[in-house]
View 1 (tube, rainbow, N blue to C red):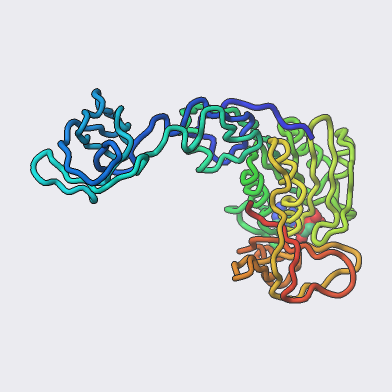
View 2: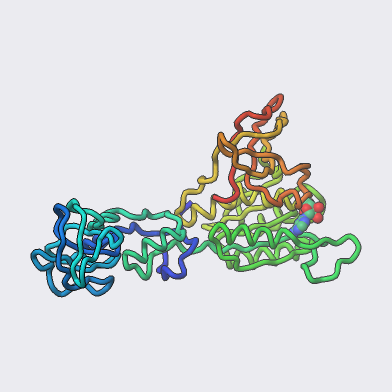
Length: 380
Ligand code: AMP
Ligand code: MG
C-alpha cells in the first residue's frame, strides 16, 4: 500500500505522528563552546591564584575576551570567552580575597562542552517514518524546528453491526448488549495514529448495512466493519460490500481468534471485516489493521514482534495458529508472558492487562513452560 501524502504539522502538536521528511541538523548543537559547570573560565595550567574579571552568563556572553593572567566567572551553558580553554567548577575554586581566587591545576578542555558535540551540522537526525515521541520532539525543538512534515493521519470509519447493540448510556432491553467494539476499535485506531471520522451501528438488515457502509466508504481511507462477516443468515456485510464494489482480497485466516476475518479494497480504500466477538475484533485489528495504518503513514508496520519466555505451557492447535493473550512481566533473563486466563473470544475482560499475544504455531503438542515463544507486543 502507498503511504498517504504528507502535511505540515506544528512540532507542538506532532506527538505520536509519523515524520514524512528527513531531518538534518542545519547548525551545530550545542551551537557554541560552553561551560558544563558554574565556575571560572581560564587558561589551563598548574595550580595558581588569579584575579577574576568579568562574567559570562547563560544567554549573556561576555563582550570581552578573557584578560591575560585572569579568570572569568562563568555559568553552566554560558559561552566560553575567547582566550579561555578550561573551566574550574565553583566547588573546586577557593576565593582568597575579593576578586582573587586560588585554582587547582586544570587541563585544557576541562568542563567544556564543545560546539557540535551533540549534533554536527549536516548530521541526519531523523528519518522519514520516525515516530515522533517526546525525545524526537525535543530534538526537533533544539534544532529550531517549529513545523515538520508528517504523514497525514489515515481516516478510519468504524461500522459495527448487530441488532443486539446499544450504545453505553442507553438502557439494555432483553437480549441486548452494549457496543463495546466501536469504543475499543476507535481507541486502537487512534493509538495507531488514525483519525476516527465515522462510527455507526448498522442493524442486521441488508438495507442498514448497505447504508452504513456507503457512508463509511465515502469518508474514510480505511473502513473497519465489526461482525456480520460469518456465514449466519443475518450476516450481510460481505454481500453489501460486494454491491458497493469492494473487491474481496481474502476471507478467512487460519487463526484463533479471528477465523472469519475479511479484507477487501476499492480504489485506494481498504476495508477490513473483523469478527464481532470483542476479543477477536481487537486481536485482528492489532494484527491486520494496525500494520496497515502504520504503512499508510510510512512507518514500519511490523515493529511489535519479539520473543519472551512463557511461564505456562501453551497447547498447540492442529489446524490454526493461536494468539494467546498474555500479561508481560520482566524477569532476569528478559520478558516473560503468562496467559491472562480462559481464552474464549467473547471474554473481553481477559484483554485487561494484556501486554502481548503469544504466537502459538499450529501443530501437535505444546510449547513447554520456560521455553521461548514469539510474541506480538500490543504497545510498541
Ligand atoms: P457476529 O460476528 O456478528 O456473529 O458477532 C459475534 C459475537 O460478537 C456475537 O456474540 C455478538 O453479539 C458479538 N458482537 C458483535 N458486535 C459487537 C459489538 N460491536 N460489541 C460487542 N459485541 C459484539
Ligand atoms: Mg452479528
